[in-house]
Image 1 (tube, rainbow, N blue to C red):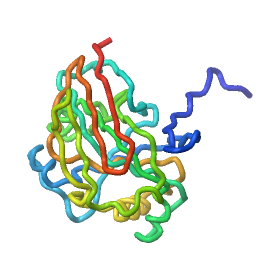
Image 2 (cartoon, rainbow, N blue to C red):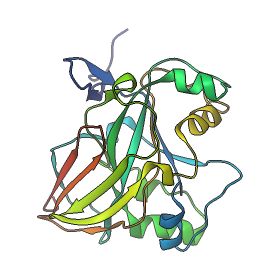
Image 3 (spheres, helix red, strand yellow):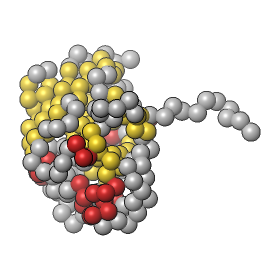
Length: 231
């Protein structure tokens, strides 16, 4: 037996300070994890438990890339996020096990067709057309957790064409890293290669062709994305 066409490539994220690559298995995303962002979208945070949506691994995009403005939207948004990279298997783990399962952290961009996401909300349908977009999971290099320390007061920020649009602290997250990983592991056998995008602060907004996005989190490699013309 042989494959009838070549298998898809393995999507990877570089690891800071090494020539190693982190293979992306699955991409989970936390919804409404910053109260101010939920408010600007006309929503409230759910303090009962975190909730999630997903992106396919093929949505992975390297920091510094130039990507085309995607089809099917006229309202393409940036969302700056802390990314958790899983390095050990965990299933139904407590918060201590969750911390041990973390390999490292990275800056990420959850690029979103906001109008298509709103369509899903209005019709009470999935968000896939809004969120699972080609080149929409943008990752900077992963920094191993022992080089980062405890996640808490680090600044998270994003600029569009040099103007600051998002500026907050990771301590503003409703759900902590340990809480997210522990909770998610109650529903999935998390394995090395899984990544979790932890939500975005207030200040999201639209981009157009020619725009340059830059962002950062204290202690992590910065992130950059250029928006090209539509194909």
